Image (cartoon, rainbow, N blue to C red):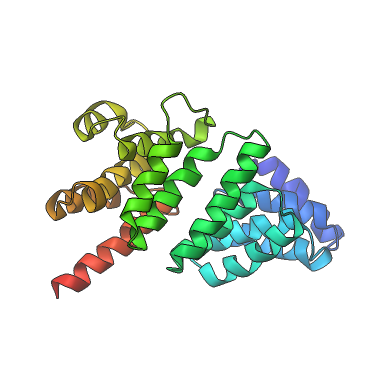
Amino acid sequence: MDATKIQELEAKVRENPMDDASWFELGKEYFDDDFKKAHSCFSMALAQRPFDADYRLNRGRKSLSLDSFEEALADLSLAVRLDIEDGEKWHYLGNAYFFLGRYAQAVECYKNAMERHRRNVVGLEAPAIDWIWMAYMHDGRPEEAMAYVKANASPDMHVEESDLSYKKRILLYAGYTDIDTYLREVVNYEDDLDAITELYGAVNYYLFIQPDREKAEKYLNKVLSYKQYHHAFAYKQALLLRADFDKEAK
């Protein structure tokens, strides 16, 4: 967060609470560090411009961060209707459906995202492929999951730097990387966020590709041992899986 910029923006919205652009900018300043404040700022922006697709997207993303998945679904459903050609909006709508356990609808959203990423020449395909694979697996459709990842993942595919972890994971699922090499050489243990995301790829591997409950739990517990980035989707998934495992054990 830029403290000086936040002070300036806070002064602007105090002076003019109907300044939606300043509320939105303030929300973006809080985006990664204070999810509730960011969500509130985006709500104030939407109070002035309720049909702004980017305002809807950003509030929906913060609802996901706060585990308010139904609220996220509402905002993101409207966001894609307001801006149907933006693959990012389709992707986050898919995440809302995923965390609500509505996997078939999640797949369709991710495929809509993939179509638009390709049409718009945006390097965001790797996350969509990964989430499609996971949604198929959770929906009990492993053949479709494996066929999709093998047809769409490749070592030379372009990704945004922030999505490199997803590329690493789909190359593991597709068989380009073996699990031992992945855990020894591919996982970036130096960066906590990367480690959380990439280690959850190992959890997926031992859940769905080479089922091994003991190893899946081992890497699940490694993910949950990290002290920060608990808003990361991989950490959220790990928490849900841990709860499922604990329920089975009772």
